Image (cartoon, rainbow, N blue to C red; front, top):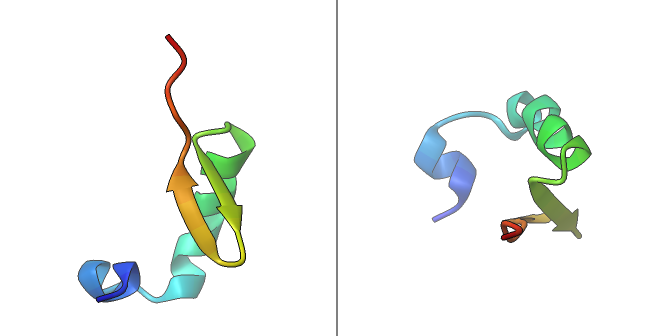
Length: 41
């Protein structure tokens, strides 16, 4: 099951939020796969 199916939200609606997370280095993405970045201690 894909994340968009779980959230019941269209992918284009999520893109602005993903961009914000990327700008603040909270997620990293490549080839349409996004992962949370590790927290620095």
